[in-house]
Amino acid sequence: MSHPSSPLVSVIVPCYNYGHFLPETIASLQQQTYPHWECIVVDDGSKDNTREVCAELCAQDARIRYIHQDNGGPSMARNTGLRAAKGQYIQFLDADDLLPERKLERNVRFLENHQEVDLVYGKVRYFRHGANSRFSDSIDMQDKAWMPQVAGKGSEVLQEVVKGNIMVVHAPMLRQQLVQRVGEFDNELMACEDWEYWIRCAASDARFFYDHHDDVNALVRVHPVSAVNDNARMIHWGILMRVKISKLPAVAYCKPIRELNMQRLFLLISQEDFLNLYKGSWLTGARGLTNKMIQWRHCKFFLVNGTYWFLRRFRNS
Image 1 (cartoon, rainbow, N blue to C red):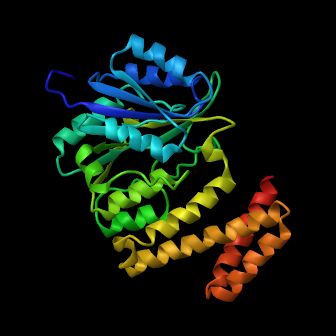
Image 2 (image 1 turned 180 degrees about the horizontal axis):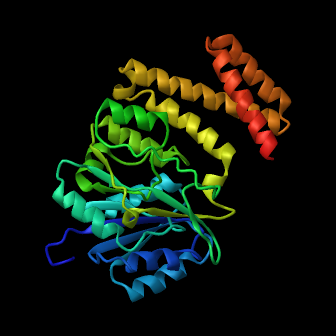
Image 3 (image 1 turned 90 degrees about the vertical axis):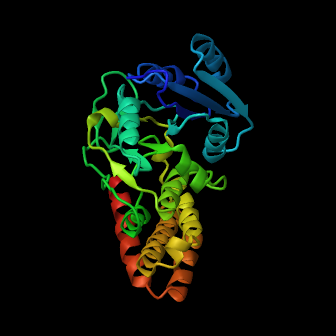
């Protein structure tokens, strides 16, 4: 597909102690049917052999660049990559994940033919680390699809993405103009930072498009140290993320979306309290729940939902 005038795709790969995964991740990029890309690997202060692995990869392929920074988290690493990016299109890719071989080609072709669309994405497929792993629509490998397949722009899209995350970080390809409009990732968020970014994209009136073809699936590796496996961590950063987006004008001044965000915020807070109870921090958990019962008029809602979450977690433990 590529010819001299083909637009450049900047693929940003933050890496923290994932040097052992990088060769396979970069190989999935080198196998793309669309070759006009640059890869910016941002080493976020790794203590493993990431630097040596990248040196070898860069020597083999001039399209790969390596940037080292002190450890600052995924947002800071992606922002470093964004500042170095030269492409018309942006593709994120975590250092332990993969892209199917036609993803860049299909995404670029679509965005070139649909100038009104700012962001195009497809579904996610999970696979266990190791040989002979099958693909699944859900991280628990139960084939329960969770993505709502949202398309469009405005309040309807914003409401859906505030309700819940609609994609993983390397599912979309974005126009550089959208990134310039929305700005950088929030450096304070160490998780949920991509979700918060999609919310800001929707709040900026970006047009989303969902591509159902398997060629554009985002392939996510599931392994013991995957960040998505840490439930307590996701709850903690999810709370901060919802507090932050409550201040966005598009959220603050739209009553249904504002109330939806607050409802989900207090549900997360109740889950954090119930998690403290579950872990044996009885005083902290009980104090948190008591304060909410006093302060929040919807205490029945979050107590019922929090109890359901607690019992389900206890049953599955």
